[in-house]
Amino acid sequence: MENLPIDPAAGGEERAPIAEPTLRRLPVYHNYLKNLDSSKTHAISCTQIAQDLHLTPIQVRKDLACTGIVGKPKTGYDTQALRLAIEDFLGWNNPNDALLFGAGHLGLALLSYDGFASYGLDIVAAVDADPAKQGAGPRDKKILPLEKAAGLIRRMHIKIAIIAVPEAAAQSIADLCVSCGIKAIWNFAPAKITVPADVTVQHENLASSLAVLSKKLSLRGE
Amino acid sequence: MENLPIDPAAGGEERAPIAEPTLRRLPVYHNYLKNLDSSKTHAISCTQIAQDLHLTPIQVRKDLACTGIVGKPKTGYDTQALRLAIEDFLGWNNPNDALLFGAGHLGLALLSYDGFASYGLDIVAAVDADPAKQGAGPRDKKILPLEKAAGLIRRMHIKIAIIAVPEAAAQSIADLCVSCGIKAIWNFAPAKITVPADVTVQHENLASSLAVLSKKLSLRGE
DNA sequence: CTATTATCGATATAAGTTTATCGATTGGAG
DNA sequence: CTCCAATCGATAAACTTATATCGATAATAG
Ligand SMILES: NC(=O)c1ccc[n+]([C@@H]2O[C@H](COP(=O)([O-])OP(=O)(O)OC[C@H]3O[C@@H](n4cnc5c(N)ncnc54)[C@H](O)[C@@H]3O)[C@@H](O)[C@H]2O)c1
Ligand SMILES: NC(=O)c1ccc[n+]([C@@H]2O[C@H](COP(=O)([O-])OP(=O)(O)OC[C@H]3O[C@@H](n4cnc5c(N)ncnc54)[C@H](O)[C@@H]3O)[C@@H](O)[C@H]2O)c1
Image (cartoon, rainbow over all chains, first blue to last red):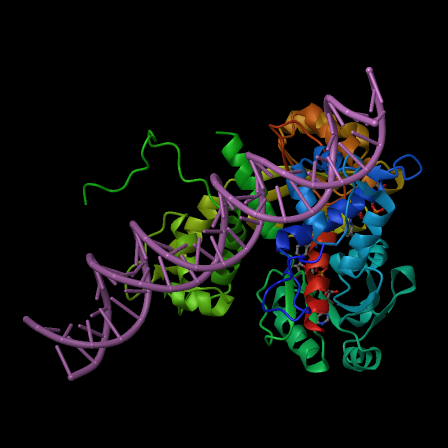
């Protein structure tokens, strides 16, 4: 037990970089575990998870290993511990505050969604340029004028912005966010936005997903 | 010019299977081209596209090659022809009808979005179990009772369903769709749904994207 | 108590995707 | 007209991700 294969040339702080596909599957495992009847199922095997989620047991095992959890042969993983390990790994126990830009159709849907809380995201308020949209939003969230954004971000040390404004306004909102110290942007506009290297952007492009879907459909049909 | 490297063992119908990451980038190129001032820019090079979209020229060239377009050295691609080639490849010129399940917050946002038309998707109507939601929806789209779904799908030969109902109802809606002949499902519920092998499912899991974003953010911060 | 079997964890192989290299082609400068 | 620089297209290498193999371990049956 003495020669555990420590990453060479690493002083102990550089952990294995997590693969993005794995990262995207972790919430799926988490949701699966949440829906298990925990009074009945105290342990779960990779085999079972893989079967239910249409994956291979090997992949599941490798994904879960990233969280540091250890399983027991013939039994599997403790369901409670596994769920906590995923939450811990994804940082869902330390909620991040976020500010939403654009309280239109999509923005309001995001604002009214109560599921984000369990994913460690708290949308503290929305911002909209249209005075008619301003005031009280769903779930006691305020919809503020654009001018209030900078102060709010600075005062609350908000690090995440969600962009749900029209494409034409996306870049200017991004610039505003960056100048206020935002470090991560979740972008729902179908536009490429440019930010400094130390800011992370996650593009949520529905057109891409749709392209995959319709291409698969058309290939099936022929 | 006589020995073009035809795919061996292919009678001429089996084209190269398109890589999914490439497929996801094609709409991004398309949107980029749409925003170009076409009166000024008649040709565009991979180098330029790559620079603007933060990709490598080689990748852009390879992606675009899938659409069958050919460029000219020193000039690049004809912007108009390139845009049409992408639309053609993605099938955006032959719109698909789709039926939306769930006219809640997210469903209504999707229903009111007029951008899907240019991606070859036409949401013909929505369906909701709640009588209070039924009636006229945005953009002259009807919101129908659940009982009407099966008939509508069969009558209009609808092949695509969009699921925006609560997680608990997602599988039963999927089962209904499959029994009516739906061949592709775009699923916004955070649930894994099970369908026969000849039906395609595209899961749109916001939790996955959020996991990527927040993990990157937390790695940056340390 | 021992044999059996399901499962984990690690290592190795395969498949898929991105990036690099290089010759060929074309438009424009001299 | 000739040379040069930019770009394409194809092939090869590097990297990433997924799958397979195999020994070790623990629960269970006999
Ligand atoms: N609705 C959908 O289903 C859907 C799907 C895919 C992508 N999108 C994208 O999401 C974005 C929002 O879509 P939507 O349907 O909610 O549009 P929308 O028009 O309903 O809402 C846009 C909101 O942004 C506000 N706004 C405009 N400029 C602003 C600015 N500079 N600062 C702050 N607020 C501003 C508007 O007042 C409006 O309330 C768009 O970029 C759209 O392309 C939407
Ligand atoms: N709102 C968001 O921003 C968001 C984000 C991520 C995921 N989602 C997911 O999208 C789905 C919809 O979210 P939402 O916020 O619109 O929820 P919602 O509660 O606002 O809307 C759900 C709608 O589905 C209808 N419905 C329920 N059961 C039905 C059935 N069997 N057949 C037809 N209609 C039925 C309800 O009447 C309601 O109108 C959920 O699964 C949610 O987890 C939503």
